[in-house]
Length: 169
Image 1 (tube, rainbow, N blue to C red):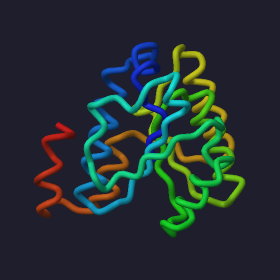
Image 2 (image 1 turned 60 degrees about the vertical axis):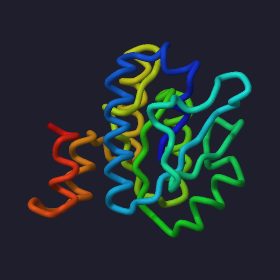
Image 3 (image 1 turned 90 degrees about the vertical axis):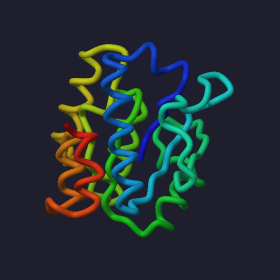
Image 4 (image 1 turned 135 degrees about the vertical axis):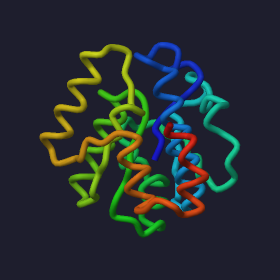
């Protein structure tokens, strides 16, 4: 799940290039391995749409929202439930607002939540750190892009491994 990586938000974030690069790696890996992706856009009329670097995959579900917690949006919650997954890997912006509220709501609803720390950002480093600390203490697993990709792959030497390896090197 990719939360609100939008045109008017990205430039204001800490390490935007790193965050976008790692998110692209997650998206490419999910696409290659058949893992469903939901992408959200918070009030796109004001914040713009998802940055072009992360769009263009026909298998990605993109949903607009107004709530900070995606789980408070009925369309999002129903879409997530229809996917039938109990584990959610989260990346997005802003960490201390939409990411933390979404993750907390998912944990309350018994989802296993994995927050990708190097693909999640806020305007300030203090806000990012506070989000990660709060979610780690609340039961979310704090992971990195490489951790996620290698867990999804499971083993070396497969065609998917060979295709995705250049993205992680």
